[in-house]
Length: 428
Image 1 (cartoon, rainbow, N blue to C red):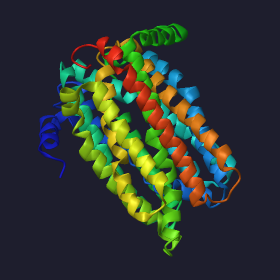
Image 2 (image 1 turned 90 degrees about the vertical axis):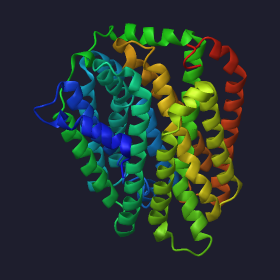
Image 3 (image 1 turned 90 degrees about the horizontal axis):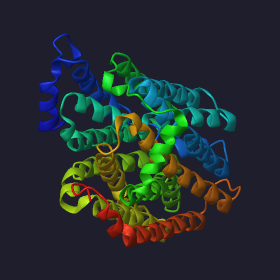
Image 4 (image 1 turned 180 degrees about the horizontal axis):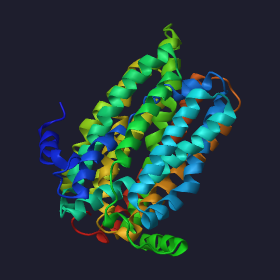
């Protein structure tokens, strides 16, 4: 079921769990093939909005999401510097431990304060993982003399991560019918498994490069944006991060409204959302496999523009009407993150030195999440203190987001030519 390429790699490195492993890097690669997809075990994805909304008004729900994204803004760059200075594995362990605590807090406690604390821990979890996960994978391959395999292998990890999301979305939605908070308990167990795999892994020398001092390292990373190509890629990350999360954020209330308007019991929303998330993740797994060939055939710029157009079209379709049939279009929501993440990592990782690789990738995440956090706060102010969003309010929020996407894509398309001329030929 995992596919012949995946099975062959597992056979080649099956001894990496035991005493016959030829290196720590080989052991780590074998374990990372399990830890990375398990890190995508988001059982709570179909229910988080509904879980919070059962005790908090919509404005507070959006504020909770803003707490997460703005916390990530504060943590992103320090987490990258921490990774470059202290080591990839310690950073990933800290990330996994924060995830365990966050999901436990969501499950055992209620109220805005407890949820805000959990969102902050979740920000630690994702901030310390972002950038470092790609850097860890690239450097493990590099230490084995196989850095050229990075795009294909990163695409495979993304594909299997999406398949994990599919299984967890469906099962989390089913559990949500019985008990909404139960999905958080399952997410917590998955995070414990990831933490265990990381604790039996071992740091390798390349994962602890000699990083520059904090401010100097940030300055060096920012200076790289003087290159028009890297600046253009940076801008695409900001826009696509916002576009990625708009359908994710609003699909639960959108689907609940669409089902309720047709007399379907809203209590079934978690299962319906879980089924939709599972289908979306399956499409994402399929799309991730297309990232390397699209990168080779179209180049990074046209590939990134193409998937952003798909995402904006999905948002515009959801804004056009609140109807269950349009949920089919949400299936394409995962195409952009599945393809774009692999493409950006494949373009950036080889051209940024290890001493600042995680810092630079963290700057990507910081800018994207800061932008989306600002959008969330603005949308929360527009919606106001309502208990549940009306169809008109949902459509208005989605329409504004679609316009934002269209304007951003147009600007990037107009500047693509100049940026591409500054790119290495292999990735332009």
